[in-house]
Amino acid sequence: MKTWFQKYHPDYLGTKGQRFYHIRKNTSWAKPISASRLWSLIPKETRYNLLSNTDDVPVINCRDFGYHVVQDGKLSLERPVVVKARGFTEGAKKEIESVGGKWIICP
Image (cartoon, rainbow, N blue to C red; front, side, top):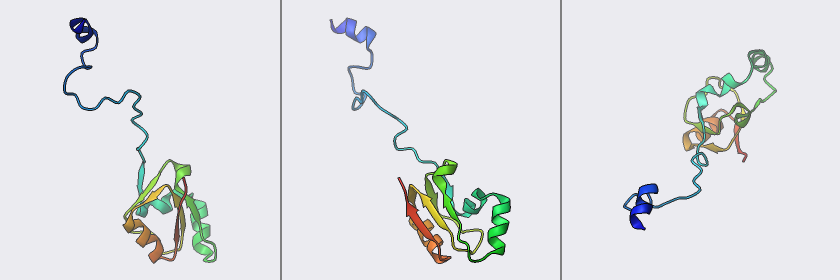
């Protein structure tokens, strides 16, 4: 019986590590974006309108563009911005707060 089982299920026996039957490999994947590229997510015309009007603060939802984690980087414009994402690194949090912006974690 062992030979038959080994023939049709060769990875069942042996030292292959822990067996995970219903593995979903994409559960912990999160696409990152650098903080220096955040302003590029806003369309060009809207960006020009925001630069001329200093009262408006843009809200960038990174999840709408397919990004989940905001990583370190220098913001290209020294303007306050509200950034929504699933995760932030410590450097990205400090950079957003240094220009007067806010970061919001949204699931």
